Amino acid sequence: MMSANAFAQRLVSLNPCFDAWIPQWLPKSWDFVPSTVHGNRLERILAAQPDVVLYGTYTNARLVAALDEATQMVLVDEPNSWSQWQRSLTTVGEALQLEDEISRWAAEQEQRMSVGKNFQQDLLIIMPNQYSWGGSSFIVDMLRHHDVSVNVADEDVALVQIRLEQLIQMQPQRVVLDGFASDYARANDWLWHNALQPWLQRRQVVQIPTELSGCPAQRADDYLNKVTQQ
Image 1: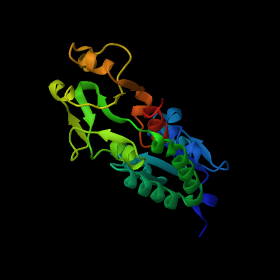
Image 2: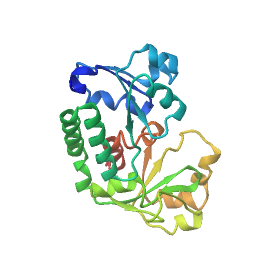
Image 3: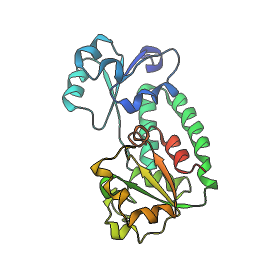
Image 4: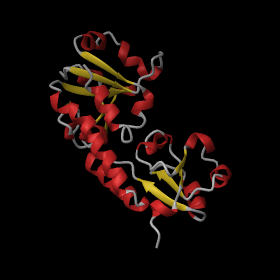
């Protein structure tokens, strides 16, 4: 039986987060069709004649079922922890028989993320509508795995909503604004609150752009480096 590396030559992405991520480890002999080409339209995907389609946890189930009848489908699980993300990479590598390529890419990524070992400040991540990542989230676990100290309002959940009074009692050295739009929006109201503005001014503030905050697993090294930038 021929290996997938030899047999499957055209890979289609169904997730915008995969579009810049997959080419980093895909062999040059493979063709890659990003999601922007087909817009997740069934007829356009089939017209691309894929050998393999890579999809995510939240991809439309009807689309996945229809494609499953025509081609090989490979799921990339959305992780809740750094160890889950490592296992997901291993699973994808085995499914595509690209274990060596993905293993090399993962090792290079870990090297880029070693910056966390030299970062001394503790930080808190806040998002629109008064949300923050909790201790059971992928982002917090990924940062802590790389020796970044993260304050959380609740260790047992992935996502937690923080009251303004609760927030200003917390004392992180750095505040990470994750996914806030640059323009005014109702979801950003609390950033301009009279009690919060002085609190923010006493801390280093880092802004995570929406395109990065939307794909933290596939861009984990970029996220960590942005969070810890000096």
